[in-house]
Image (cartoon, rainbow over all chains, first blue to last red; front, side):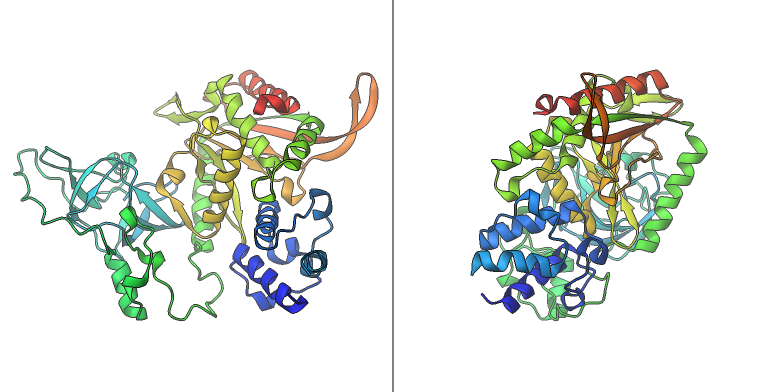
Length: 81
Length: 388
């Protein structure tokens, strides 16, 4: 999977959590909590889906740093390539 | 039309999930009702055969209107409201109840086949969208195909907030009505205390380390568990103020304040929250939040809350003074855990400290009992093994 494909998938997962938004509206470098008004429950569901889809387990200690679409893709991509 | 909350006056019967002639059992979903708080799935609380759907799909009717008639087995036809609360109709019932001497109805026609069933609304949507019902999997009673199972023929580019979510303007008005009533009628008292969340968060980290990500617990689940369990020590926090007196509820149906993107607020119940373990509460909360934000809650979840819990920690708020949702008699609020100096064994150490507050109905109980309730929540959270 290349970067564009992964980013498209993560956009889809985020829109599933926040259906009021369109995938292409999500800014890669904006804080997702502020941009999409998502909360810890949403991020918990996202982490669970990433685990079930790609087998990646984002440690609780690192989640605080994964606040943007780009940072999530940056973290996941090397672990599934 | 059931009253799905103290602030509900009317509702639109969006879709029938059963047909006349079908048998139903207690707990079956029989209809979808659109309210100010979104689409609500309505359960039936009796078993029998549906003899009449008294309201057409699309009808906007007041609370109390008879929606369906169900013949109980071996009995003459009775008017069976879809929820107990309909028995105290707030508005004139538009369909008269039959007289006690009314003759029994003719037997229903042959029951619908169990295979390939679809609600009238689902058939309508399928025809409109050119979808073949034969290829769909039903999620309605007995596997029947209902409206939500029919895919949109042109699913992309749906307008914002048009994916089944609630009308936020209408929801705002509903919240306004409930909160006005609360502040007008309920003499609130307010209490608060601080909890050292260090033990609970450390326990959570240890527990989550052994669980796969989808099964991990959020700290909110510990707060829910403590709020529900503490009721056993101070039961008068859990119930309703009705007819000038407190009715203590036998079960704990814990209302959870869920904020919706765009400004809405809804407080559906985690039913029998005191009987759910932490994993069950996590799954229940996950499901409730997901459905609340898609406007797909159930009638019992909207009607039956006996106590409400709100957590504002996610929004960085350290303290909340709640407003009681009538006719309930208390609301518990949790803020954000903040690293603060804390004295342990005579030494000052940094600890994550969370403020918990209680707004109580002073007609139903006093500050002393409220204080005991908060103390029990504090004790449970500072000894997290007691929550398992």
